[in-house]
Length: 344
Ligand code: NAD
Ligand code: LMR
Image 1: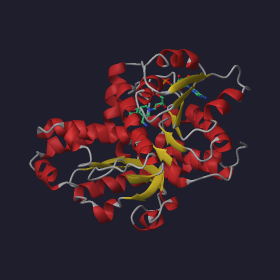
Image 2: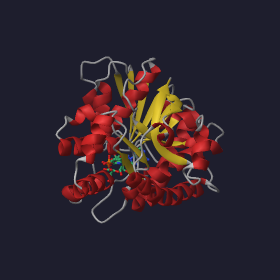
Image 3: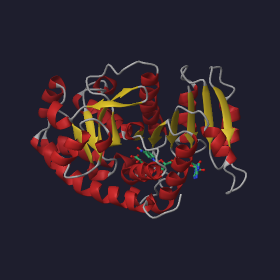
Image 4: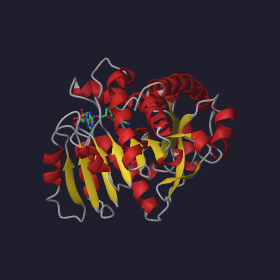
């Protein structure tokens, strides 16, 4: 299987590419970046695993050969390209720079590798995924089942923070919690009652412990931005999270399905997946992109777990969802409008 990383020389791109190089299912790893892609590729290529690693770096702004070569025949493209936050910024402040980076990379995917699964990490995810969708639509190659906004870091954080609070190994919480909504502040909604044993422990927490848990999941990114003090945002935990979701895709391409109680979520265009349109109309107030647990087959969404039908949602979680929907609508419109009227 060929995997392409766009933004491979960055803070996320490098450790993510390392993790992908260690996966024996990957036979070819294409590392694309506007700087240092060849250096990172040369370094990783010495690791004694099967994946052949190549670096692709454009010689100039006009050079499209590097990206075309990087994408040719690829099965999976992961995009952590773009600028990260500095203290005092929101993810939305990254829109002006990252919107066109994502649009242009995705346009190249649409032209060269329209059948690849696409994982968008670049922020603001709530808007960059609609940008990607609109770009692919314009090119006439949009497959909603293969476009994913990576929200896995929110689940990773929820598992860690809750595990520490209730005295459970955080790794055992994978699949026993679910995080839905979007990927930014109060659009992130952790669901803590999907597993009975965990729900009981959550019910034993004090209100302030529970509120702090929710706040940390929603604003965990800010903790890292503050601690890095101008040197960027989460990179290593994100590389782990991005790899975790990429591995889900690779496993599905190899015919293996998740054995988790609740599979990992991703931010997807719901009207494009079976049963999604009904959810958008009945429960999401028209928000067409939403992160839900996705069931994967052959690199695409074959089904999803409808949280309102299949998972227990508490009253306070329902309130969180209402708040999340307001924020999401604006970002979805912003992303969609950015591409409408632009020439690709
Ligand atoms: P970084 O600045 O360390 O790396 C970004 C890389 O992208 C750089 O190497 C840069 O050269 C490259 N790049 C820029 N323009 C490019 C282009 N047109 N084509 C290819 N590569 C290009 O930043 P980072 O810390 O790795 O973060 C990257 C993005 O991921 C940011 O937008 C950040 O907000 C986002 N992020 C998302 C999540 C999430 O949960 N989805 C988590 C953490 C960070
Ligand atoms: C995160 O959640 O850590 C990322 O989205 C990066 C950020 O800007 O917080």
